[in-house]
Amino acid sequence: MKTLKSSSLALFAALGLWLTSCTAGFEQLNTNPTQVTDIDPLLMFSNMQLRTAGDNFEQQTYNYTAISCVVQHLSPKTAEFGPEMYRGMPNAQWEWWYAGRGVIGQPGVVKFATDIVERAKKNPNDVNILSAARIWKVFVFHRITDLFGDVPYFEAGRGFYDRNFTPKYDTQEAIYRDMLKELKEAVAAFDNTKRTLTINDGVYRGDLTRWRRFGNSLRLRLAMRLSKVDPATAKREAEEAIAAGVMQSNADMAWIDQANGARIQQSNTWQTLNQFDDYRLSELFVSTLDSTNDPRLRIINEAPRPNRGLPNGITSAQRQALNSNTLARVGPHLASPNRDSPTIFITYAEVELLMAEAKWRGWTTPRTAREHYEAGIRAGMTQYSICPNNPPIPADSSIVRYIAQPRIAYNESNALEQIILQKWICTFLDGLEPYAEWRRTGFPRLRTLNPAGNVTGGLVPRRAQYPQSEQIFNTANEAEARGRVNANEYGIFLARVWWDRP
Image (tube, rainbow, N blue to C red):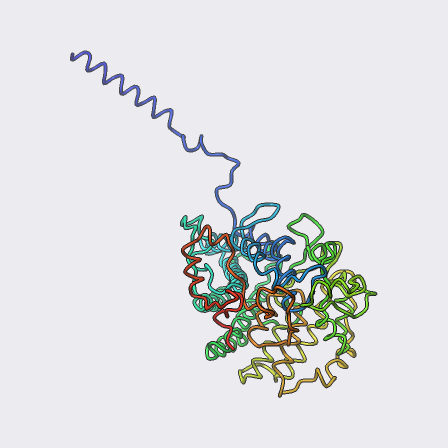
């Protein structure tokens, strides 16, 4: 027995040595040397920006098909989109932002932004990447919440980190207050001694001065949203943003150059608007510009089409009676067949017009309301110099004549309407921004939309409904958020978001 026991101990000892030798380096042997386990957040940045610009079946299609028709920049040639499409189109928009879709099957923009922020936090030398990503994340979320109201925010995009795939819906008030905080902190954290974004930044090429101005300008935009619901905070945030330094010229505009390359690089404006041939310029938009001899119409309208647009909100029979082939449509400068038209996120013109409104409200700005207003018009006239196909940029003499017209010259008695009208013009094709401003101010004065069977009773919708996918996959949280909405017989469409006050 003693001999057997000794032999057994020797056998187990030998077996142990053999197992140890076999498992030594086990992790190295079972790790794929070609598989990425971590990624430099800088390498993800330009992709996030391009995804924000959108592709034609998601963000851009929704922007043009629904929102740009609602604000009457465009009018559909074959069917009354806009309010009619409000039932189904939010699904594509929501999934583009949150879940991700498209030919290349990448995650949503929220996931990109959240991931860059989390990765950049790990390295103090990446503080500039972190700050820019925080600003961009705010840009993404302010679009989402302005359209839907209460949405997943604090828990959104973090499923990879915390395995929470059913994020709760935060109130728009909480979201806005955090976004303003994020912008203030992110701008202050930029450090010229740390690594910058360089060519991986498709908007500013790592220019931290212009990133600071972009962050402050976005903060000014968000502050103005609160002008009715919380005027004290709006004033404080706007004045602080202006003092910290907003955009100074068209050189500071936030836009991305989209080349005729791979699909993710291309602008799909031409395909969405002209190749599919489903849209014309809105009659209201064209007549507004034409009646004031606005030289921008030569850039926007496809020559040699006449300056006559397609009315919004007419019946199918009325639409069919019109010869749409003779009506104005977006020209090659803003919808280039080479798919190289830029996507503009914030213009310097808008910033000057925001300051004009701020001064009109009695807030502190560098110049008079009139001076800001006229500077905004000038910037809006010349901002299309970034577009392809040699756009006919108005000469200074043309701009002077335009501003001198009685209907255009600054008038304190109807200044707000004048300011918002110019913002409506200079944000052409960025439907989400004039849609927010129309809800906040009631301007411009849109035409009545009342085709047969309109889902809103002929009224312009004030928000989008949550997509069906949320009712299926995030049932409890979506139901709670929907329960906070003061819906009426037309459902959620006419319920106001938090900052939208009569």
